[in-house]
Image (tube, rainbow, N blue to C red; front, top):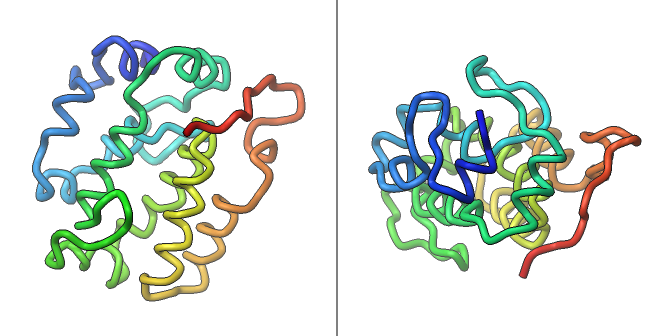
Amino acid sequence: MDYYSFFCKNGVDFQGRTLDFILNKDNFWWDLNHDHIQVVFPVLEPGMIMNVPPITMDEINKIKSVPNRFEEGYFRFLSFLGLRKDYTHWDKSQEKHYTDFNHNYLRFSRVIRSLRLFGYEDHAQDFYNFIMDNCKVFTNSVVYWTSAAKDPIHKYIGSNCQIDLSTRD
């Protein structure tokens, strides 16, 4: 998959979907489908969907060097959770995605880690704080979320990799 094309040039994912297609799907679709989370929030490790390759640091740095649409995926994810950009509720019916343990808990670590890799440290920390304050806490979940939010990012990329650690506004 060409992540640069997907985030910067209206390219397609491994299923031929554009970012616009994914962002414009309704919340029911976002809940039932799983592979799009790995596409919209790529990380350096292989995921559960084998058709979605991990992203490389070279790709991340290339995407960060030009205007891109990565952040739009994050704001759509917040909307899926029934949240505004400031983490206030706009749709209380969507609270089920973070107040009851479900598969979305598994998505949270990926979202946090991907935000950090793309330089959105503030978003990552704000989201981490939100879920820690609002989710039913399960020990395993907290371990994964905290690792994604607090571990040095170099833990995930190795010591020989060049990374631009600058943050976004």
